[in-house]
Structure formats: C-alpha cells, structure tokens
Image (cartoon, rainbow over all chains, first blue to last red; front, side, top):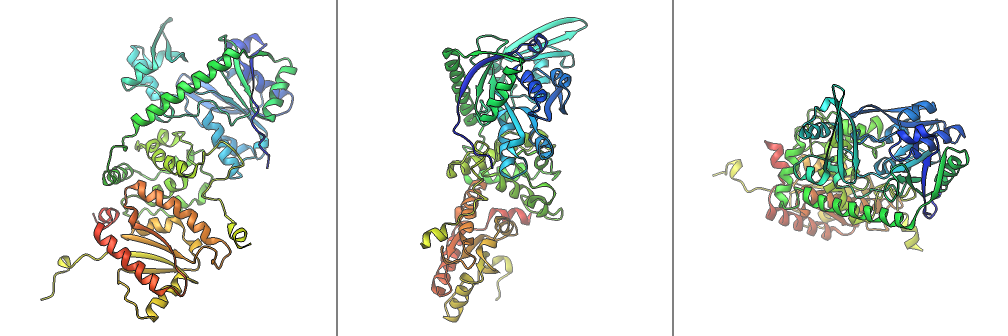
Length: 399
Length: 146
C-alpha cells in the first residue's frame, strides 16, 4: 500500500494559459488545464468530470477526449453528486483523474481502505467546497428571487452570496442575496453541507480554490502529495498552466475563510440538531417515527460513498419483508456499520424517496462514536476503520 | 384462584449469548452447584464470543428481549487466539449505539465468565434481572407488539 508522506503544503497561484479554458473555468481553468495535460502526458487514461446539462443538472462523464473535459469546465453548485462509486467502478482498470470535493476525496479514501480502489490509480484534484445545493432547493431560491426557475441560465456563489442569472426572452436578469439571509428564511444549502467542517480537501493530491487568490481568474493551489506534485509539475512543464508564488496574504486569507466557514458550520450543526434537547425516550420515539417510513428501496446503500458491501450486504441480507419490527434490521445494521465511517456527505438523504432525515440520524450516531474513538474517516488511507481492526494484543500481553 | 395471565407479574426476558468453552460451561457449573438462577434468562450457545455479530444483539432486542448479555472467556483466555478482543471492540460500538437509539444502557451487558465461575454467572443473572425489573420492558418490544 502506498505510504502517505507527511503532508507538504506548497502554495501557488495558477491559471490556464489557454484563453478559452481560462475564460470558461470558474477560477482561471486550472483544474481543466491540469486534467487535459495529465491526459496528454499519459498520467491518466481517463478523466471523470461532471458535464453540465442545465443549471440544475449534470451527468458524470468518463472521457479521454480533451474537448469533452474542456466542455465540462466551470463549477456546478446544484449537482450534489458524489463521484466515489464511479471511481470504484473503473479504478481497477483505468487510471482516473478527477476533480473532487472534500466528500468525494474522503469517500475514495474510505473505498481504498476497503480495497475497492487503489489510490495509485486515482489522481484527486481537490476543490475547496463551501457547499452544494439540492437542485429543488435552488429552484425554490429562484422562485423566491422572482425569477422563473426554468429560465435560469447561470448560477454562481461568490463572497457568501448566491447569484442567479435568468434569460427570459432574451433579456438577462441578475439577482443575488446573501446565503446567510436566505438560510434564515429556510432556503439554502443542503443540511449536510451547512454543517460540514471539511471545506478544504487536505486529503486529496491538490487542493484548489479561489480562497486566497487575488484575481478572479487565478486559482489558489495547495500541492499536498507527491502525486499532486507530479500532476502540477507536468501541467506547468507542458505549457498548459502558468503559475506564480502565492502571496503570504493569500495564505492567511484562505486560512481565515476556512476557519470562518468551520465556525459557521459548527453553529449550524448545533442549530440543526433537533434531538439535542430531547430526553432518552423522546429520542427513541423520534428514531422509530423517522425510520418507520422506510420502504427499503436500498437507495441510500447504493449511493453511500463509504459502503463497499455490494449485493451480499449484511443490511439487506438480514432484512425480511415479513418482519414487523419497530425499526427494521436494514436500518439498524446500516447505521451501525457507518458509526465509525460515515463522512456526513448527505447523499443518503438526497436520494431517500420518503425523506427520512438521514443526515441528522447518521450524524447523531456516527459523530459520538467517532469522538469516542478519536477517529476521523476519510482522512488517512493508512488508518483502518476501527470496527474492522483486529487486535493481536493477546500475544503481546502474554510475553 | 389462578391469576389471569395479564395480572401476573411481568417477568423480563433476558437473552444471553454464551461461548462454548467458558461462559456456557460457567452456566452449567451454576446448575451443578445448585445455585438459584432466575428463569428470566434464555441462553444461546455460540462457539466463541467472537462469533456474536452485533446484528445478533440488535435482532435479539427487536425480537423482544429486554436485555442482552454478551458473555465470553476472560480476556487472554480465548480458545480462538484473540476473538474476544474483537467482541470487546464490537461491544464498544454496541454500547454507544444502544445508548444513542434511546434504550437504557442497562439493556446491554458484557461480562467475562470462566468455566468455574458458576456463582458469578448466577449472581450476574440475578443482578441483571433485578435491574431490568426496575426499568421495565424494552420500548422496542412494546412497539413490536402493536
């Protein structure tokens, strides 16, 4: 297994030399240019990118066509996809390069721990992530702005504001509001993102973003691993990317933004925890009430970036439709198995057809266990999940 | 006159997983020594406490057990090298799980009982029965009956 070196951080400002890429990219097209250069230099066989269909829709595409990568450039805030499962499907056969949010990267690392993917084959270009929005929630915001949700052509999140641009019969209309204000009124980011404290993907190979950058068309890049360095060097040497040393002020700004985001996330976590004030028996009633709606479609398991059990899973195997338990074995086993490994990405809640508040439930269970164990999943590939850890202390103690 | 079934005093149902080599033999010893063991206990013999999947415990609770005992050989005495270390590890998870779910922590027990500790076994069952009688039937069981 690949040994993880002590994280070296080196900061640069980088942007694509190609004007077309630079213009289309969210922050100078660095990620697109890096993927294209890695493809051409044969570091990766394919790139996994999310192609925009509309503001609310994107599809993951596995491609070795540089044009297609360039096409999918730019950020999509309303496509709360997790790419982990796509990586797992192809990483055995192909070397993949992909842009990752922190939760993608953490999912991939968890899968690598479970030997579903080899990190040697995966090049993760991390993206700083403030949040994603559920497409339906974004439509609500558009309606709240007084725009026709179907006519929205562009969205952007900048400096804590959500910008929407609609195109109604050739007339472009731009509206924006502060995220904080929106969220006070009940609109806004996904629950998982609101309370997420991992905003910078320090577990990926590169961490890119606009925090700390002094120009809208320059990306702040943090080179984190040897693999990241190879990618970065290749992108520079092949002439796709221009760089400059990051200013010291930028590094501070980035840290400040990160700290501020984390603080806000922590306060959201407190605010959203509906179970905090409840007594033990009320908590029990809450769980029974929430989970009794489950129709056992298995969507949460299918989409979970941590789960690696495939078809012969214990949760589905122990569940029987004829059971009349208060809480089904499917839910109990799933929650139990994720106690040490849940990365709080919120994918399960997104796909749940009966709207069970799974983000909250999984967080309640797993956070207290992870605190108890002092273990954070998805950060370090060498740290195995504690539930699977086999202790051989007996032989050591006997001696 | 015989009491109607509903009027009879509620007796807890306690599910015990006993490992073949130590705690099951311990339970056996309790009988041989003619020690009083409350009839609230239902013993399931497993070859090793390491075989007890957390799912077994959860299923036991769902099926109507008021408390579940997980018992095995003392740490270091396992007949299968280190399997009761795994039991201990899983118990840590179960404990947090049961607590978070809203069940009382007294509904889950872990104890190490060797083959000669019949008295300890009897004492433990008495102790658990008493505690469970105090806190009442498991809420999971109540739901199940509905």
